Image (cartoon, rainbow, N blue to C red):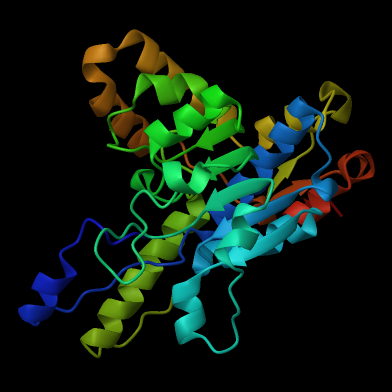
Length: 306
C-alpha cells in the first residue's frame, strides 16, 4: 500500500499509469494497534481511559486507528498538516499538542524530500524535553530515528516502544530489537481481508483505466466461529493472542534474530510471505460468555454467535 519504493516521477514522465492499494489494510492496522495497546496496558497495569495518544498521519490508516482507539476508550489527538491543507473539513492538532500526548502512533508515508518530510520525523530534537509512555511505529521504519529512540529509552524519557516497521528493513538493529516491548516483522496490515482488498483495488483501477467490463464477483468472506471454553483464558491478553497471531509473529522473529544471524534478512522476508494470514475481527464470532467477561471485544469488532 506504500509508494516510497516506486519512482512516481519516472512513471509520470513516461506516461505510465500507476495505481496503488492505499487503504486496503487500514482496518487490519487499526486492529493491530488496538490489540498491542491492550496487551501493553495489561502488562504495565495502565488504564487506557487516563491516557492520550497522538496519531501522526491521519489518512486511510490513521483514520481507522483513531476510530478504534476512541471506541476502546483512548483519547486521541490527530496530527496531519498536509491533510489540513487539502481537506477543509480536517483540522490538525499542533505539533506541541501531539508531542504532549502520553503515547505516539505513526501512520505516515515515508518522504525524504517534500514540503512535509517524514524521514526521521521522530528525532533527537522532537524527543528532547519530552516524555512518552509508549511509541508505536507501524508506518515505515525511517519515520523514527531508532538511534534517537534508543537514547531516549536509556534516559528513561521513553518507557516502551512497539515496532512493526524497522529502519533499514529487512536488516534489524539488535539494540532496537532488544529494547522493544513487542516486535513484529512488518505485518500490522496483514489479514486475509486486506489482501483481498489490495487485489480488488488494483483490479478495479486496471478495469477502469482500460475501460473494461467489470466481472461479477461473489463474496468469499465467511465468518469463523471461535467457541473454545472461555475458562481457558485467564486474561484479556491470553484471549487476544489466540485471536491475533501477534505473539506467534514475535516468537518466530525472535528465533530468526537470535539463531540465524547470517540469514536474518532473507528469513525476515520469508516469514512475512509465508505466515498464514489471519482473519479480521469482524470475521470472527465469539460466544456470549466472552463479551460478558471482556466487553471491549464488541468495540474491537467481534460479533456474537447467535
